[in-house]
Length: 115
View 1 (cartoon, rainbow, N blue to C red):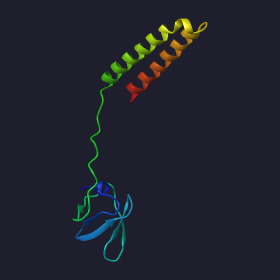
View 2 (view 1 turned 180 degrees about the vertical axis):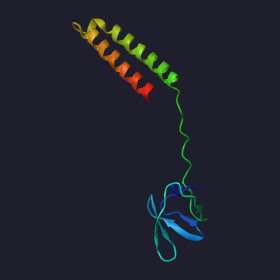
View 3 (view 1 turned 45 degrees about the horizontal axis):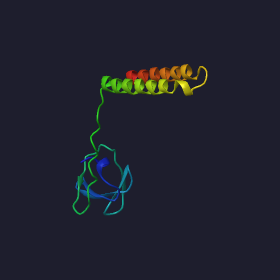
View 4 (view 1 turned 120 degrees about the vertical axis):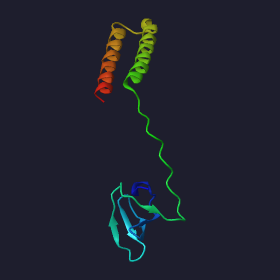
């Protein structure tokens, strides 16, 4: 188990000695109280009697194509909704709103593709 995966207060063994995690990067030796800096990736062995931190949900990778397809559908529906409101929007308000929407769409697409 990695040091990062331990909860603060959890006991563990390292190099034959028992420690307690006291902060995200520090542990105290149970005998003597010696403080030790540990990297997040340091391998440790949890000691019994303490709960382990629940496993994090796996990160989900999204494909840019799927994100863009979903966003384009959303964008089209927003435009359609604006066009249905055309009679209630004074002057060139509809054209201005659609231009803003389109500019924001391009910004989103650029951010996803540069991602």
